[in-house]
Amino acid sequence: QDLNQPYRTGYHFQPPSNWMNDPNGPMVYKGIYHLFYQYNPYGAVWDVRIVWGHSTSLDLVNWTPQPPAFSPSQPSDINGCWSGSVTILPNGTPVILYTGIDQNKSQVQNVAVPVNISDPYLREWSKSPANPLMAPNAVNGINPDRFRDPTTAWMGHDGEWRVIVGSSTDDRRGLAVLYKSRDFFNWTQATKPLHHEDLTGMWECPDFFPVSITGTDCLETSSFGEVKHVLKVSLIETLHDYYTIGSYDREKDVYVPDHGFVQDGSAPRLDYGKFYASKTFYDDVKKRRILWGWVNESSPAKDDIEKGWSGLQSFPRKIWLGESGNELLQWPIEEIETLRETQVKWDNKVLKAGSTIQVHGVTAAQQADVDVSFKVKDLEKADVIEPSWTDPQKICSEEDLSVKSGLGPFGLMVLTSNDMEEYTSVYFRIFKSNDTKYVVLMCSDQSRSSLNEENDKATFGAFVAIDPSQETLSLRTLIDHSIVESYGGGGKVCITSRVYPKLAIGENTNLFVFNKGTQSVDVLGLNAWSLKSAQINGERVSPFSE
Ligand code: DQQ
Image (cartoon, rainbow, N blue to C red; front, side):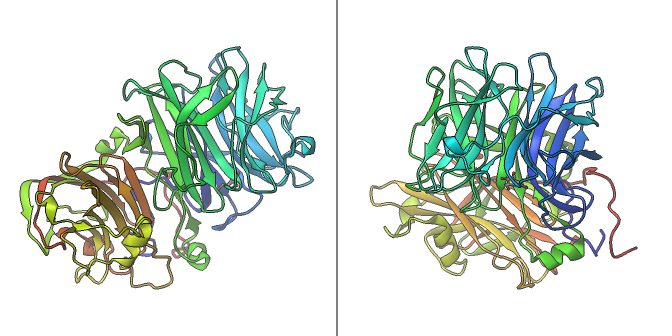
């Protein structure tokens, strides 16, 4: 443990040093996984002249750094190489579409192709002299400051490629601008966007992909058949990633969500904590769709500069359509199991009212994978939820653990210091709603996570669509030094947070299960593993040891 660097992660992706934001162009090529990312080679803060950092992996867990794929170099990207995506052409060649900031500071879309397709590491990329392929068209109402982040393209029924680019109108109508092409190089803007939604502001990093309605197997982006489509957008106004599930009309080239969008606050989020500018790719090796998201720091920039880095990627998650057809499910990819060491296992333990039980034996409590399932018997003892409590984050923030309610809070205390001065708690509370249904609230409370008062310690929360009278309530939490990534209800709700303990570091880190409610709760099972460190992009030279 490098005590100068207690917040560097053991198995969450980060570059050797400096600033990282959005995941870009993830893919698998010739059996090698690639992740590109928005990267500032010059420091630990964002810089407009950002480049495409690049790392490769055999298993999505251990990563080797590669030279940046490309940097600003031609008029169409001289002021920055911003986010974009990879499309694998039918002949197997991967092609990158990305946003360039051109010589006039306009946002334009460019293409880059591998120099040597027989190199599985795709170390060299060449930009087309034909760039830019798409420029903002004032006639069509596209503002040059709001025209970015092309998706993976998909092939339509007519053999033409389609791609969407995020945008918005001056009056805050969010747009998924649609472009079409026969040859992938000459693109024409369609007369109508694929989808738009009033009063949502700029749509960054859209993602559009099919999900199977018949099972958990996932689909390549151009697949059609027994599918629904998902449109994800990153709203710059809230810095959250929202999704809708709906139908894509291939004839009319429009997407219609099954339920409303963000306007009425109803669109679900991929994560209710820190998680932004996410992107999926189809892994044809394991027939799954994998999601990555940028998890930014919660510390002041001066701390980032001092530690020499900023930004993580979430642990890669498999993502698929839940049985209800109304929600996406997410789960850490199975490769995490290769990191598991010591295991602690509990079966059937009663968590009495007011109890806090330590999970002994997780040797590396700051690098752990904890999976616990609860069964709550006395549901009739649940308090009735206040009708005005419609904002889960607000309930989680206002009702701290000292407030008792019949059912809960119960859950995990992670990254807990020896004397409990510091801890992060991830927990459930169950309420009754007036129509005799139950409301399950999941919270991730960072307010006690560190004695350092300078960090953003906001609490996060979400409702989990689960009926606790029929189903067990599961919570899986990945703990990794300064990131706590939690999956509630089997992946229905994710909450990711960043924490910077001063005391709960190294061996002084503990893990507990607790129940602060007035009724006992059963732990049906608990499995906790210490995780060893992955090899992530090699050793970083500490600025403190030079
Ligand atoms: N980050 C990129 C943009 C994108 C934003 C620039 C989202 O392309 O819209 O670094 O975080």
